[in-house]
Image (cartoon, rainbow, N blue to C red):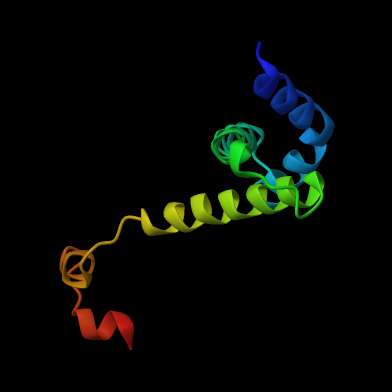
Length: 101
């Protein structure tokens, strides 16, 4: 491993509890938390060379973790399947307007 990889490994080992805490806030499903954790690691790796040290490493890791989880959570909400109102109601033999009111 080169110097950047060693520094990144040290950073992740030191702050993995912080990352898991943020990920767990978004889901209590262990599988989904692990997926979020991996997404955070990818984003940390991509941003690691750009980290200037203006804030503490813990603050930076926490912020990247939070931003990543928020982004993934927003994307998850957009993928909710929707059905036209007339399809749902007409199949049951009801008027779409009576189903709403």
